Image (cartoon, rainbow, N blue to C red):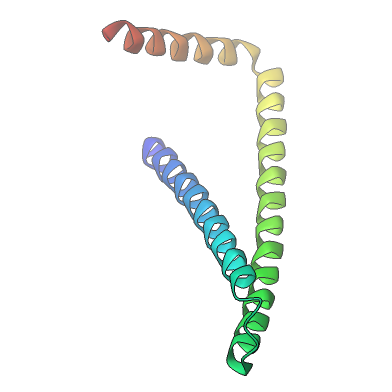
Amino acid sequence: MATKTMNERSSTAVSKDKLMEDLRLVMADAETLLHATAGQASEGAVAARARIQKSLQTVKESLVDAEEAVIEHTKEAAKVTDQYVHENPWKAIGISACVGAIIGMLIARR
């Protein structure tokens, strides 16, 4: 059950990273489009550019908020981990040794 939860968290983190990267690409493409159409003065182009600029600003603010939340969660996880290691040093050493042995065996298999 714990493995399933860890796998779900891992896939969620990958999905979030992919989403963030995709949003950055869309924003870059939209900004390029805005600069490319800056010379067009038709009413429709001006209105579309204004909507795109407003949407881009909103997305940028959302990305900044999301990055701040990720940083905050990472700091909290680091604090909790540090506290656990201080409270249970021998467990932490044992877990680290087991993880190291498993990684060593996996590397040796290649």
